[in-house]
Image (cartoon, rainbow, N blue to C red; front, side, top):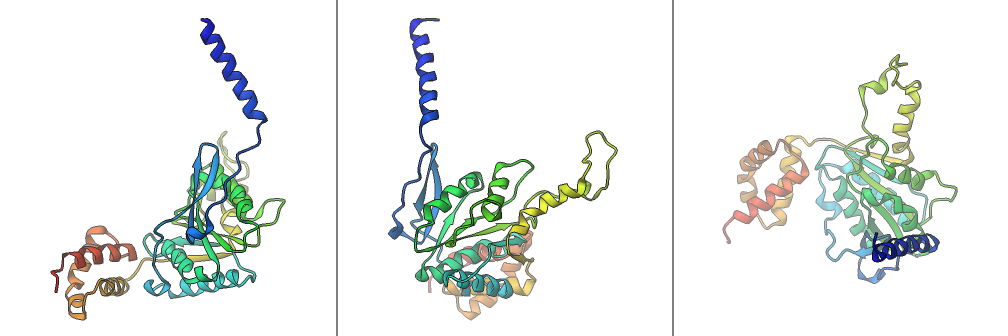
Length: 290
């Protein structure tokens, strides 16, 4: 080994020792005046809140055929903004039915009253405690938004979210709620073996009931559950008509588009609100200018 190689090895060892003595990186304060929505970003070991320059403008009135879910989450969010007791919310069910859009619409509904949204990727859930500490002293009300959430066995973010919801020695901050969406009701994969009793297999779980309890314990920490179901044909066409209207189509054009809208849904294998939105953009964009 050359003298240079020995020097580099010693220098690397010294840096590792110094890094171990340094305090953890502290997230820097964002510019709170730059927007209502933020994303949690990581740069090396440090995290920070990045303002969203062009946040979604969807409103509660844009969301059709989920009236019950809309009333429940609007009421819960209103309680939160008004500094009354409110629950963390888990929205689960069929894809494309408005789960994420409903949370964004709540932000637009209550932003003027001090509501702010922080989007956190599943990979960064371990930073939830740092995010809560960062905003705990702020006068605004913060919803931490975790979209399309699901976990596999042993993922670290699962434990971090459980602690953030209701499992830490410290109380959850008064100005923070967690809203999450998922296609899985219990956020974890569920298998037929979970329903089995004692297994004689050497690798079998001696206490399968406890395994099931562990899998549902996370979802139970959300106080409010909202379930979403696939849309019927008339519901789908109603959503298509709404979005075509927002793009300037008149009643005759909307009626003439029904057949194309159904064929579009058939090709996609879904009559979801997302598919209706995609069809409306495609169809309205092809219409000749008046």
